[in-house]
Amino acid sequence: MALTGDHLRRYAVARSLFKPTTLPRAIQRLGFVQADPIRAPARAQDLTLRHRVAGYRAGDLERRYPRLPLEEDFFVNYGFLPREHHQLMHPRKAREVWTPARWKQAQAVLAFVSERGSAHPREVDAHFGHGKTTNWFGGSSNASTQLLDGMHYRGLLRVARREGGTRVYAPRIGDTTPVAMSDAEARLDALLDIIVRKYAPLPAASLGQLLGYLRSGVPQWTDLRAAALKRARQRLGTARVDGVDWYWPADEDPRSRRWKPDDQVRLLTPFDPIVWDRRRFEMFWGWTYRFEAYTPAPKRKLGYYALPMLWGDRVIGWANLSVVDGELRSKFGYVDGRGSRDAKFRIAVEEELARIRFFLDREEWRL
Image: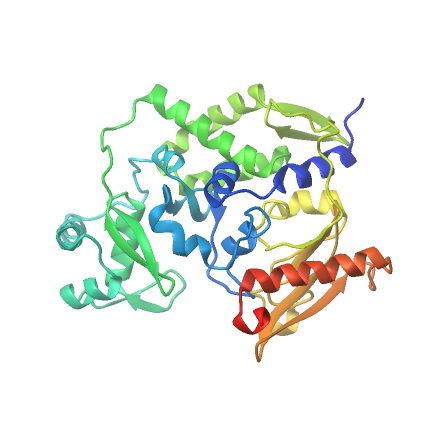
């Protein structure tokens, strides 16, 4: 049976929306969960996990994180990943070279955090008084916060927990032995396989794009990426469909009947693996989706935090959600301008909104 675009679309949806399981198993299966601080109506990591973790409520990941074998760190972007995946990236060598004076500051902060066991950025700032500095977007922030971020990135610290959304740091105990070339290649292959297993099936251009983003996770292996991509293309499942080369894990078959999406309506975060790849999104569903949170309001077409609306294996529109005076409010938009008149669709939308109320776990909705 010839592989078609319909096969690829169904495969992409069904493999990502696996049967809801426990939080550790869901993160292990995803391999990595992207994080974002915007709450509309919840953070991206929670909106991603609610579809894949049985009984999940907003904030469960942050509440349970200290007791789980997880790490916060940069991968292809920032988020949460299993500790064994995190270890593949370290010891990490940052592209920015610190001066001896900066390293002296870092060592002093590391000693302070080690003595206390963990430390909030405000405790570090109060003790050292590093002052203010210009952050990456031109604003002002505490110099201590920037230093802690750099120490975390270099593997000197880890995120022990969060308090009110702020990272609380602890010393990271890890092997600092330089990685041999053969081991580096094997680790890079493993990291690329994690990417493919999360986002498959991937068009060739997106596979290359994600490998480029991996510079955030392993900047020390930038020169090894071209060879890693070549090896990946040799070991992954692949086919050319409508003039595009696609890739997926070699042990899966996109044509299999096991990849059968259900008939639920799901509102997905812009960072959900189903819709993250905007190139693939347009190939599958024939329209352009943009994340507009940072777009000036008069120029927005979909909304501040438009959630793509998946029905079965089709993304037919979007929704903007908010909580006003304790009530969940929703505003929908549709690609065809009006949406489906199918009674089953309307019921499925109401069921999804009910799931979101449960997920947000507001007291007034449980009375």
